[in-house]
Each structure stands twice: as structure tokens, then as C-alpha cells.
Image (tube, rainbow, N blue to C red; front, side, top):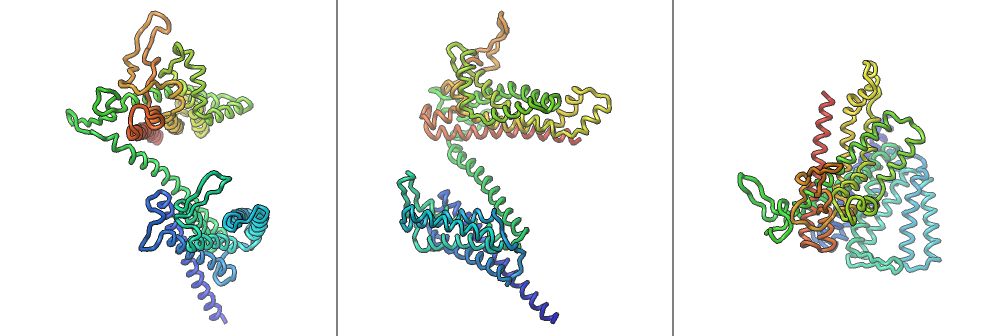
Length: 520
């Protein structure tokens, strides 16, 4: 008898191992299908292309059919106790909601668009199916609700693609939407959605459902999301580099003393240059960001110190928190309009755009983030540091200056880095308060200082003159066609990207320096 039980257990373990291996294969096949669909959407592969003499849409259909069959089969085998699993008896409302929404979408679209039924027929049918699917997804066994709906959806999409219902030449032009969907984008999007669903379901099956299965599914979704975000960032940077690097590096050569001369970066724009460049815009961007930092950082850090170390927690700090969060989320155009209506008339006759106004407006935009991050960094300093300093007889201000602020410096610098990354690329405020065309020569802020006989006894005409900046230059060239070709605008965007990355690099290096100093 014991030998029979042992033999049955061995057979069940073998079946479970085979089923989980099949589920793992389904996950891998679904991931490959997702990657292929992404490449298709990005036009790296066209929808009407062939892979190994097989049409791409047919390849999508076959892959989804295989993954769907495996996913459904594993769920049925688990529910029939053919393979070992740890599935719960019911799935719960959270599992039923996406199943109901899936049924509502599929049935509604098929009944209204494919079969052509009116709203009096397709709406009740879709609603009834959605309710039934919701009840199934909430009350049925976990292994069934985790596999049957999503594997069935993959099989449905596979049937649509293999039967030629949706092809690369397919077009859907609903009159009430005002947009047209083509097969070139619909086919890969359907393949991506179905393969993501089957990958998620099959990932649960690889761990035998239950808590471990849900964890595996969550890990897959989180990993896919992280990969998507990183890939999107890389694609954005690569796109700008591809569009602008060629023009930006045109004419590069070695100068005297093995120095590198990059005409586009070192020249201005005008008749005196063989290759027009963006050097005035780079200088203008630097001074705008530098002035904003000089204005915003002391105010933001000082306010953070007061709120974190001196102010009592109460209504006042609550109001400050709400106001700070609101200011940080305020659109940049609002800051620009404020500068245009309030600051410009008080700085220059006639309200002419000038550098100082741009510095102040960008500084106002930067203050909320510096305040928020600095306050969080100060609050994160352990109270043991303060208590130890007070125990040694050190005063409150000396404790803040010598203990708290040095420990909070890395967090403060992180906030400054994030803020610089935002204000360096802002266009709307610069257009309204600082921009003055595509200059041939950069502004000379340092050389512009001079003493006067009247208060404040120092003047600088350069600060009260308009300047160019890289965000404005990109806007002017690409959007309005001023000052150059489209390639000139893309090259300006490429240089702006490099400038922002340089600001980030300086900030990160500074933060690492203080972190190492604190660790010693």
C-alpha cells in the first residue's frame, strides 16, 4: 500500500514538474511576443514583414495560441487535482474586477463593431457577460480564474489574427470617435496585451498558484513595468541623439594645442560663422540656472531648517505643506505669466524680457522642491545625533549647523539635482520673461558689473537684457521655423540634453563627495 502511495506521489510530482515547465515555456514565449510587438510598434519591424517566411501577424497568432493553450491546460489540470497546486478555493473581488472588465470590453466590441448590433442589443449582452465573468472571477477556484480568462483572451486574439479578421491592411474608422485605427498598430498592440496577460497568468502557474504564485505574477508585472520605463528613457535619449548628434558634431576638428573645436557648440548664430552654433544659448541657460540656484537654494534650505527644527507641528506647518505642494505642482506657464505681469514691469522700463527676471521666475519654481526635499532630508537625520550634541553642551544652532545640516547634505543635493533638471528645460517661462531672439554673442554677466554713485551702488546692464537659452532655441527652430533648419533644432535639443546631464553629473559627484565625507 505504501509503495502504491509513493508511486502515485512520484507520478503526481512528475506531472507537476512537467506542467510548471510548460508554464515557464509559456512565460518565455509570451515575453518574446511582447518584445516583438514592441519592436513592431517602434517600426523596427513592419507589420507586413515576414519572419522565417511566416507573416508576422501569423507568427503572433501561433505564439498566442500556444501560450493560451498551455495556460488554460495548466489551470484545468490544477483544478482537477491532476497536478499539485496551492490554489485558494475562491479568488476574491479584486480578481473578479479585471475579468469582468475584460469580458465587458471584448463582448461589447465584438457585438457592436464586428456583428453590427445596435446599442439596445450589445450593451445588455456586454453587461450580462461582464457580471457573469465578475462572479466567475470572484467565486471560482484561484487556478481557474488565474488562467482561463487570460488564456482564453490569448486564444481569442490568436483566432482573430489567424482568421484574418484583423490584418495589417485592416482599418477601423468609427464616426463618433473621430480617429482611425489601422492594422499596423492594432495588430502589435493586441499581441502585446494578450501576451502580457498570458505571461502574468503563466507566471502564477509556475509556482503552483497560491501566495507564491501571486508573488511571481506581481514580480513579472513589476519587472515588465520597470523594463518598460527604462526602455522608454533609453529610447527617448537615443531618438534625440540620432536626430541631433550628426548636425551637432558637424565640422568638429582639433585646434591649437590639441584642443577640440566643435563649431556648433562654440559658435554663435550669424553671418560671421561658417557653421551656426548655440554657444550664446548655452551661456544663457547656464546663467539662468545659476541665478535660480543662488536665489532659491538659501531660501529653500533656510525655510526647511525653520520648519523642521524650530516650528511646532500644527496648523501653520500644515498650511505651509499644502502651499508648498501646490506650488511645486503649478504649471510652469503660470510662473511665466506671473513673471510677465508682476516682475518684468518692476525690473525694466516697458517690461522688456531680461535675464534677471528669468532667474527669479525659475528660482520661484525651484524653491518648493528644495524646501520639500531639504525638509525631508533634515527630518531623516536620527534624533540620536541631536541628543548626543546637546549632551556635549552644544547649542541648538551649533547642533543644526555642525551636525544636522552636514548629515542632510546628500538629500538636499538630490532635491537640487531634480530641480535643476526641471528648470533647465523649461520653455514657457523663458519665452515670456527672458528670451530675446537668437543672439550672435553670449551675454557677459561678469564683465557687466560696474559701480554707481547711487544705491545699490552696483549695476549690471547684462542682467537687464534679454538672452537666448537652449529650450527657447529648440522651440524657436522646430515650432516656429526661426533661425535655422529642423536639423539645427534637433542638434540644439541634443546639446540641451548634454547640458542637463552635465548638471546632473556635477550634482551627483557633489552628493557622493559629501556621502563619503560623512562615512569617514
